[in-house]
Image (tube, rainbow over all chains, first blue to last red; front, side):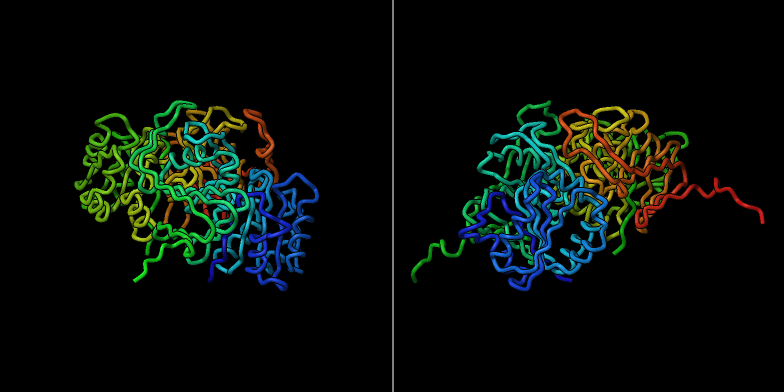
Amino acid sequence: MTRGYVIPIGGAEEKVRDAKILERFVRLCGGREGRIVVIPTASRLEDTGQRYEEIFNKLGARNVTVMNITERSECSDPAYLEAMQQANGVFMTGGNQLRLSTTLGGTPLTELMRERNFNDGLHVAGTSAGASILSEHMIAYGDEGPTPSSHKVTLAPGMGLMPWAIVDQHFRQRDRLGRLLSALAYNPRLVGLGLDEDTAAVYGPDGILRVAGSGSITVVDASEVEFTSMDSASRYDPVTVIGVRLHCLTEDATYDTNTRIARPPSKLLKSISS
Amino acid sequence: MTRGYVIPIGGAEEKVRDAKILERFVRLCGGREGRIVVIPTASRLEDTGQRYEEIFNKLGARNVTVMNITERSECSDPAYLEAMQQANGVFMTGGNQLRLSTTLGGTPLTELMRERNFNDGLHVAGTSAGASILSEHMIAYGDEGPTPSSHKVTLAPGMGLMPWAIVDQHFRQRDRLGRLLSALAYNPRLVGLGLDEDTAAVYGPDGILRVAGSGSITVVDASEVEFTSMDSASRYDPVTVIGVRLHCLTEDATYDTNTRIARPPSKLLKSISS
């Protein structure tokens, strides 16, 4: 009964030179001998799966299975279920997160992935749309801009591998703080994770999340929020939110989801000479 | 480690003569000696809590505590936490479910209620808005009509006491099948429960839900859905959904959430003489 890692990536991760995030995922899955499943369902491009297969091969992984799933019925295919049962890691590509949820949601393949991630050490990573769907409450779409407002964001059920979080991606590049704040303003019990491109939240079985990659993760902790006006806001009205805690974390910084405490990367700690 | 009951009610339940649903709740909580907490936060009317206190008193419950909570800070009040710790049952009134989620979500009082419902036998009932918030994925608002479409429904995080369900209420009276189907079309892993007025889903620790009251419960099981077009639909476009299973259940009919099997009320079973 071991949880696997969950690794949402903010999109546009380095794939060729200095592919640190993908390299780390391959290593986590067992490297050369690790069995990796690629699910390119979010994408409309035919070669997305094959492209990731080649990338993972170049990073040393020899056992890569691409599941080019476009129909819900394929998610009961015994060969796919067997591959999921044997896998060490799953990687979901970018595209449209609603393509993932409408095609994979509630199917035997997804239930097996979820079950094995919670209880059997299966690691699950996803980039862009593949990151969004890891939340229980998934951002399906929304508008740009830094401040929250009513009707700015549309939530849908995701895969629930990080039930305490709402994950957003391309965060700095697409100016998404406002839509993440809007999502949290509905019910301040969750933590928002805004992932920049080429940046991953490496969330371990111990409940500690570690930043990897070249950008930032914006942690938006709503647990101390004193007030939100989302219940009385009219359509497109700005929304009051008081008491958000916000952390901007860079590589090797950590966030403990058990205690909700953020810590700087140890290499940046200011030491005091005794 | 016993779960308590969870009892969403579709609104407008009989309160004076023949108040079967409320009477059943009082009995479940221990009757005369049972300790009931009323949370009228969803309502804008000042006397909603007092009104329910009088109703529960008339039904025989002597220990009723009304928590007139309007601010998040009140949800850390030691007296309220103590009352929640001692309670046998909680009743959340109707009004606006976003008032409930924005005021109570993620607070110590709600976390305690949730924890005791899952592990310490606390029963939780809610009517109308108080029913909606029992879902993990709560319908915040939406449009009327029988068919699903894009942007027809807005979801927000609820309290998660029925993580497998999306609860809707005033179901027949406000023509809400379309918005419930829209919610399920995002991700067909959940079960929709459409509750008519004066009708309750009495969901027990064994995972079996039993209908009580004068109307119907429409169970919308999306687990066999073969296709939904929610990912490609433009704003307000109608959405294709293929393969929904639908049950209309009346008093004493049951739905087993473990097996997803519905059974008619035993009194209506057609017996075969041998």
